[in-house]
Each structure stands twice: as C-alpha cells, then as structure tokens.
Image (cartoon, rainbow, N blue to C red; front, top):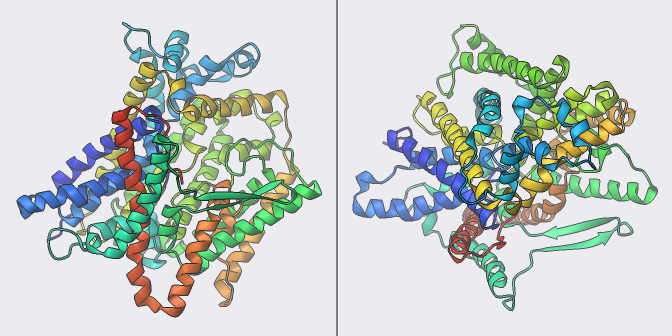
Length: 638
C-alpha cells in the first residue's frame, strides 16, 4: 500500500523544512549565489527532493526495500518543503527583521524619519535599541553576544498575527480544493514534476529517471548553467547568454528575449489558450505602454515600487480586473460555497477528503479575520482601513494562486499591492500618519508577492490528491513545517546578521527593501494626496474589461483569449518571461498538430528535465561555492 501520512514522513518533512532555511539563507545571504526559495516552484526544495528521491531513496532500496520511502511519503515530504519555502525568504523570513529595524538604523536628520516616521509607529512592533540595531546591520563586535531580548518583544506581537494569517490561507486552500481540483479540473502544472519523480517503475529507480528524453533536457539546462558558473570562476571560459534586449518605441522601452528553462518546462503543461493569452497580453500592454510613452500619457501618482512600478495606470487597471475575477469566481463557486456554509452550521456534507472540515475552515476564516482586523487596528489602522486592506490583500492572493495553479508560471507577482491601492483610493491627506505607517508595515508579508503560503498550500493539496482518505493530519504536517521553518529562519537570520553584518548580506533585503515602505510613507506624508480620480477610472475600466473577457470566454466558443493573461500582462516579470512562454506555446502547438497526444505525452519528460537540470545545477554550485568561499556565482534567477 502506498501510504502518505506516516510518522517518518512527518519527521523527515520537518527536518528538511529546517534544512531549506539553511540552504536558502546561506545561498542568498552568505554565498550570494542563486535564490533558492523566492518562487512558487522553489529551486532549493526541488534540489533537495532530487537528492532524496534519486540518491538517498535508491540507496535505501538497495539496502532493503522495506526501509525506503514510499512515493506517497516522498510527496508529503516535498509538500512540507514547498510550504516552508514560501515563508523562509521573500514571503516573510527575509523581510520582517530588516523592516522592523530599518526606522532605527536608517533614520537621519536629512530624511526626517525621526519626525515623520518613528513617532507614528507603535513601538512594540519595531526594534528601537540603537546599539542592537547597529550591530544587526554592521556586525557584532568580538566578545559580545547576540541581544536576543530586544527582538523577542516585537516578534511576540508579530508572530500570532502571521500564524493566524497563514492558518486562514490554509483554510481558504482547503475550501477551494474541491472546486479547483474536482469541478474545474485545473491543471496545476507546477505539481507535475514532483509527482512524476516518485512514480515507481521496474527496478530501483522511478521510471522518470530512466527516460532518456528527461536526461537530455536535464543536461541541456545543467550544461548551460555550468557555463555560467565556470565563467564566474574563469572569466576566459565562455558562457551561454540566455537574455537579450532591444530598445523599442524611441528607446523608451526594452523588448526582452529571455530563455527561462523553468518557465519553458512548466508552461508546457498549460492549456494552449492560456499560454497564448499570457504572452499575447504582455506584448499588447507593451505596445500600449510604448504609445503612452511617445504620446506623453503618464500618471505621476506614486504607487510604490511593487507590481507595475512607476506605472500607476496599469496598477489600478489590474486591481479592477482582480476584483472582477474574484467577484465572478465567488458567483461561479456559489453551489460549492453553499455546501461549505452548510457544513459550517452543522448540516451533513461530505468533506472527508479535505485536510480541514468545512466547519473548521469556515469559522477559522471568520475568527481568524476578526483577530487580524483587531491586530491591524492595534497596529495603527482605522477599522475600515483594516477591513479593506484584508479584502484587497486576499483578492490579490487568491488571484495569484489561481494564475499559478492554472497558468503554471513559477515566478509571478500582481500588478499592485493592497496598501498602495488604499492610499490611492482615499488619498494620503485623508489617512492619519498612524494608518500610513501601519500600512507600511504590511510590506513584511503583503508586498513582495513572489511566494506565499496560499499558493503553496493549494499546490500541496493537488500533490497529495491520491492519498488515503483521512487527510486531516496533513494540515498539521504543513502548518507545523511552516511554523518550524519561520522560527528556524528568524534565529538563523539574527545569527548571520550579527556575525557578518546585515548590510553585507543580501543588499535588497537589508538596504533597499527595508527602506522602501518608509520612503514611500515619507513621500505621501510630505506631499499629501487626495483620492486619485484617474485611479478610480482605471480600476473601473479594468473591472469591466475583465468582465467582457470573462463573458466572451464563457459564451463564445471561438474566443481565443483567456482572462488570466489580462490580469498579469503589464507586470514587469512577464516582460522577462513572455518570450519563453511564446517558445513553449509554439512548440506545444506544433507537437499537438503534427504529432498528437502520444507525442505530446512522450516529450513531457524532456520539458520536465529542463527545470530539474537548472535547479540541480544551482544547488550543486551553491555547495561548491560554500566550500570555496566564492561569492556572487548566481546560476538561477528566473
């Protein structure tokens, strides 16, 4: 029997979730190598899983098949690493400590933070000990110990909120599983690789590793990545360039041609109309931006650095589209949500396949949301701002999760973030400084949205869909992995920062990123804004355009465009990825047209080998760099 939920799978899952924190932060902060946990498909987790399945488990089978991990156990272990990867770096772990200490460290008479920022932040949410913060950024003098106490108080306030937020995300993932997996039958392209890697065949190795096409794709990516590494060590060694940009629209924009092996590998499993819409809408928005640039059409509104940075028009357009998307989805899910509500009030419904009962999930969302609203009010927000912020934030999280589960893009962000939308809607003139600074602190978990637990939890539920029916224990597996990883990450981050000095670790996380929310806050405080009318117009246009696209998709059989392309078309990451999506869309279209489904299914191993080869290359060179002491050898970005 292929068991999934065993004690040893939980134990190994926890241990590897801690290992993920060490691999990621040593790679990112110490070695300055590849990012191991910033995407919806984490490089580090796949690398560790490859070692576990291909090497460790094969050796165990050779010794005694009874002690080897079963495929189901391996998938549980991977799911725990997947969820923990979503919080160890960009999702939360690399953000919180620098952001809650930045006001103390970066405050100067010139930037006036001591007048405009610090008086309006609740002191129990930040670290105010100047010496402790100075040493955090610059390194601890010899003989001194880490001042743990100054960090404990703010973290004691932050962690209950964060754990509640992530619990609510898992509740939402549990509720949406049946609708997305069984009724709408979403593809979940990012779950194909780990599931294929454990599918058993004859002999010791899973059949995935016996396929020559997989190894062909694997070594293409591995060799290309290795040329990058060898060029870093030996500059005379030529490396293969995978990106080229050309200026367009009177040099106001650049059209980027980038070959991303992970994107090509995963988007191969995406429906053709979805893949077509992803690259088509990006080029369409590129043309629109270019026309705006040469025509002088521009919005001077400051919406911060995230999403469509510096492009307020497209940020608001995307927010309106996301509101329509989620609103329509709620209508589409009405029968399923009725079952969920019936289960919540005690009526008999079948929720035996869920990791949480409908009753637990529903009331978990209700009471968890009430707690978070109360917490946000204590942090400085007005009650209606706190409520609206959570609504907008979850609209964005749900939309991105849907795109990841259907569109298969391993690295993605939204066009905007919730806090900047609130500032635009109300105007900073109508928000008190306490609210503005409370919104700034949300950058810790709701700004750099390249990964978050709602997405990883949703994918993990797809990964274990063939497990035994009693899945309630799986909730504790992924939630415990998440909690343990966060604790390990915080301890590790403090040790590394005090040992090396935070400003010597990843520059973005300790220099640029922590200052971003406060610079934005200072700007809108010193230059008060009113409610932005153009923003309202753009949100309305985005809302109704999305409605038209959804209507056409649902009612016109010949309609070629999928709405999710419109949702992320103007995002900067899509500017980098459109060409890779176009390549794999064209290849898949030709394969299906001239080879049929059998050839398509045969070539899937080649495309799965591409991301596996690149991730493995990044992992191996990280280990080499760690021993050699070289820094800056980045194999993988997107």
